[in-house]
Length: 101
Image (tube, rainbow, N blue to C red):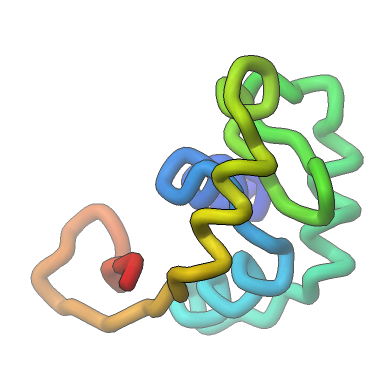
């Protein structure tokens, strides 16, 4: 469930994110390797909770965005941005801070 909660957090933060990017960020946060395939398996296991997050067009999508938003427009906008992860010791909620650039 740790991976599931992390996927939810990422989808809440970004609206939509690829399993590959979640895998990369997860490794930065927890120093544990989880593959994109494992992330998709976790998402499929918890598919009944699609109000929290779901997979659409190869992305993990925030539940609200999945139900009510324009996912395709969001994905188009995100193609022009990149997600990076920088370590910051003073952040109490996470081991690292995540930024969009």
